[in-house]
Image (tube, rainbow, N blue to C red; front, side, top):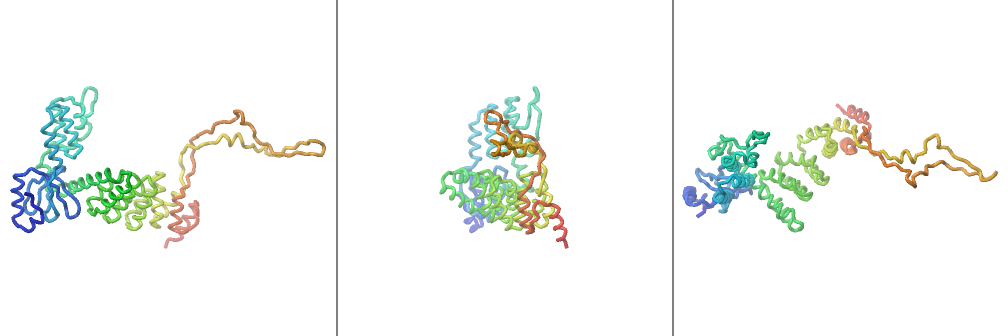
Length: 409
């Protein structure tokens, strides 16, 4: 029989009964936390008010008081046991099982199966590549550091006390990521507006700070609607991780609507660390980043960024420029730009201006593309300066700097 945390709280000897239950049951559990997160794994013990749960990142301890309820159910370890029992004793079978383990996060087990494959076939290419080897001539050489060193394998290494907080965070974040990917696949990516709204409602219910990173990983890879939802979902979180991701989103998202919504939220937050970050972006030399950072600085009213913005008003870029042939074939050169006069008789004078008429029968030339050094005028930067200062100096950098120096106390 499974014991719920609430029941355990009412019975001092409940933990002891749970240990006895674990000894007779290999079933797995999903532990629902009061924060809204989940830990899915196999219960391996309970002691001193803690659950010990084996997860894909190792064994973690959860306080009984932090758990809302425990639901029995299969986990990745049950499926691993089944696949292990069915796997053949061939190199191909071991590699296939290792690749499955990698996909579900069982990295230590994956490495063991790749190594087993090499024992069976030392030249198995897929196993060699998975373990970080590269082929050089007829030899395999290690080209990168293995993901798991031999000294780190096994449960004992995974249970080092110093690593426990990180393991627990990774377990919770991994569970959030799996849940969010399921929501995105089944609801948010659907063509049905009703399904999207259902998915949106589920996402906006999330309040666990450990869900911030999974939210950004999953929703930032979706369509524009998903990315707008990401900004909306991050808004209730005042954590640094949420602010950081909003700041990056405002610079990098390809959709203007997403960037603008992220900037609006950054303006509301008024985090003093954002402006220095965007001032550096204005100096980056990347045209898109400069313009987007300038837009954000303008909305943030960042007076300290005025010198950076003035320097970024214009720039010189080597670009492909189309040179219209018509400029030379249709334009009348200045020596010919004078009126022509003729007389039809002694009294009837006709005056006209020379024009180019050649071209109707093949007398045209295709336009030419050339690399030229051109001046770039950044209107986003100018608009940011206007928003911050209310001044009308256009693209005259000298006037902007003069005004700025006059404002100094």
